[in-house]
Length: 470
Image 1 (cartoon, helix red, strand yellow):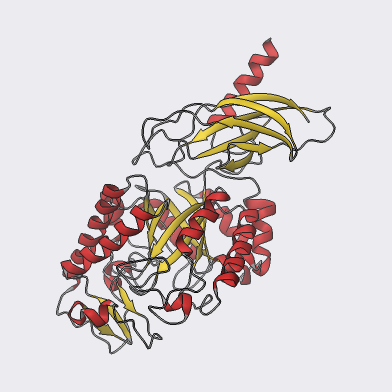
Image 2 (tube, rainbow, N blue to C red):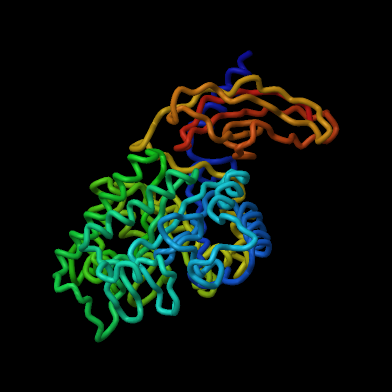
């Protein structure tokens, strides 16, 4: 009896501690960006693109990735069925032309990610209306329909952030995506006002404070839009990696590069401290020791100043492995307590195992599954316990089945489950399925499995255990 009580106490402590059995964080955002703007899918066709994405998702799942950030609107267009904006040329090769055979990439990605227990975050570029290399626009592109709402800049067309009509339209697009698709997050990147180009002038006659105010208004409005449509959808921003240099602000980082605040008119810290965004992913694509933007300096700076909301780090796989700095960068992640995860730039680099990065993820850093970080500022409701946990022999093997608990609202609705083996620090699966295939061998080894429920914000219900012989 005493041993049983001791085991239960140890198991409960393991359940509460934020580490898995191999010392990794129990909760960690492990994301990967899948972009289209580089042209990797142009003209690929429905079947080949689905096959390519299936392979990428399978490999990323093996690497331990638990969230995909999928680009669906690179230039006021759509990689999904939209009545607002035209189909993207980055899908079919020509803007306004639907895929054939028809499919909806965003819906397909939502389904495929959820099958694998991954989150899907829809990624849009808010203000870019045309890239440099797009030569033909659809008749319903906003540049064609409303040239008064955009301005040209170095071969681009940009939605003018000073115009309320543009901010309203972007929020209408966001609401449409969130309303019709079961996305877990909504993500925007680092393009607000355009990156500065020598001899190019933004033709709006405004100063920096006015431009920052325009972007602030947009971020607050987009946050409020998302909350109004589906309050559980996480709103994330991935800014350029330098907020301000110390030469511009005594609280800035000891760096010497382009600045969000001064050059892109993006006051990231204001948005974090106001609670207008739910997570921040600064793009720290440089090396440790970089002369103008040292990675170590920057990760420590963001850890210190951006802690009011979950902080994840954008990592450049190719530059990291080329400099042989994977181990050192992961060590810096662990040393900075406000860093709660990583987003890989970019997914294909991990899939292709450049520099052995994918191997290191699956064999060392992300070997066991991880739950999503908590966001109690959105919701801290705990779902109920799973019911009727029972092992059953089937034609597909020995399977542990259970049933979802009842719910009264989205806050306590169960959407995923966690399966632990032998103690509550050993996660073996995070799944949307109400079952788990047991690794049966000869029926002579005793094991205890625990199953918990997760709601939309990954709040976890109390464990229910079942003893089995495998």
